[in-house]
Image (tube, rainbow, N blue to C red; front, side):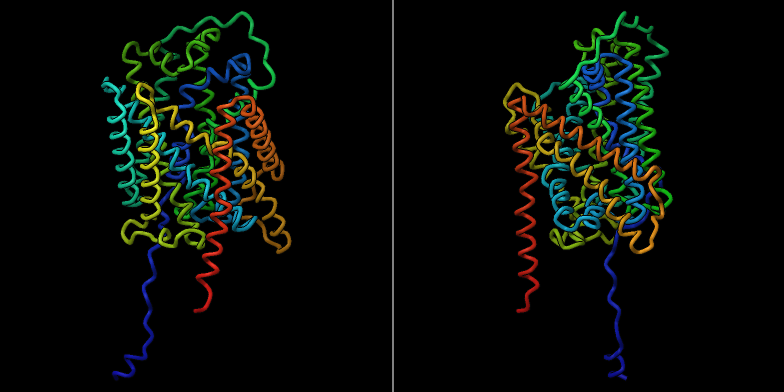
Length: 473
């Protein structure tokens, strides 16, 4: 009897894995939080002045939405094919192999997500001080920013079930404030007289700047794909989230721009870059500034929250594929979240916050410091996005060789994929051309290139260590 008990096979418990708890709206809320940022409240004036007229500015925002929609259609096909955590990293690894995927994930980790989270947390802290009419001090802003970062990390370490409820509430509040801003401009404000004659559209760098700003404002449209491993019915809900989210944000951006052009005279936009503040003051009087500050705080907290969710899914996927420390592939038994990956990102974001504040001279705000940190790798977003969209061509060819068909074929293929790739590369070329004429931007471009290319020796070192570890003793 004892021998039988000893010889009876035992099944070891399976380690916990990510849990599919997100619906279409939950995934869309994460994506919308990534997309709707301070840019739409501050940058439309720059776009309008760059292209020369409100009509061309609206066309630029509509075109940006169309380009983002092409990318969303491609990502919907890729996400339905590989409904796993990690988004672009997963697609690049399947199409082009581990080196390209690692470089994308490395860029996201080294500064992409942590840098953007640090910037968002600090900007949220500054906006909260404005809303409360409290004096600004670097130490107070840093403490508030670290508190926001800590609170969001604790929330999302507890799992997506509680996290998605807070995320959805943040998105709903943010959208409600932006909609109130638009409605107030139409109901409470008399329209300004249109300019007698629109300025002729400029050529060269101003148009390049407009294109960069618009696509920057739409960045984040692929965020739903990063949490595909936690969407309940990815082949049904992921396309709804990606396509519906882009369409909703495009409509919102066009409505906001129409509100701006109705309230702020075109000739005065060069003197009022913070157009959201102008609309708030026109519509709501003296309280408008505080309303906008509260809106900005919600925008930044919601954006940081979404990135605290999405970024660690990349590191989790890399660790699962043994391209990052395997400890990061651990999932909390109760939370079913990649807790270690979340806290590694939090630690790195906190270090960026502290370092950025320490390097900021007294008397200057910190926003410029963190915008510089983000811009170091901002130029890398578009090439990786173009490469990811190109992966659909590789995977479709493999499908034909094996007689497979995608469960969700991207509508308009191959033209939608080709249009996105062409637009991304064109804007990237314009970005490099504009940066070449500005010494500060050339420096940022150099630093960004070094940070991205540091992934090459990092991958070589990781591959060497993996081969060494796998050798028999």
